[in-house]
Amino acid sequence: MPETNKTPLGCKLFVCGVLLLILLVVWFMRAWSEDLLEEQLVSAAGQGDLTTVKLLVNIGVDINGPHVEGGGPPLWAARANNHDDIVKYLLDHHADPEAPPYPRGQ
Image 1 (spheres, rainbow, N blue to C red):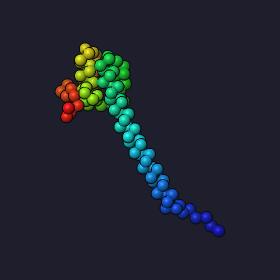
Image 2: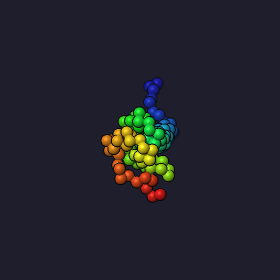
Image 3: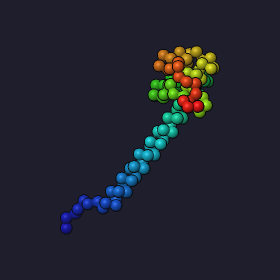
Image 4: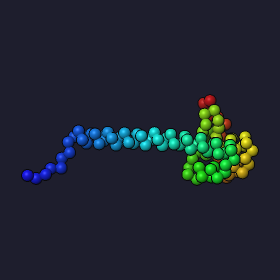
């Protein structure tokens, strides 16, 4: 008797459902981790941690977005704490000096 490679429709739908679930989890985790990295960039800029600022900018964390609820972009954090080396680094890497200090809509 020859073997058939027919997969029942129920199994195909189950596999598709699992793959969709995995994609959704990856999408949510990515959005969540981006928020954490953006908060770390603001924190590092405010604390004067140039090494961390450079690392986060080099991996592509958004340099201009207002990142922390009730706070502003990294450039504002660096300016507020007189970290001129970080201000210069951020401006050299296209930080927008006109970026609003608070998230849009607040």
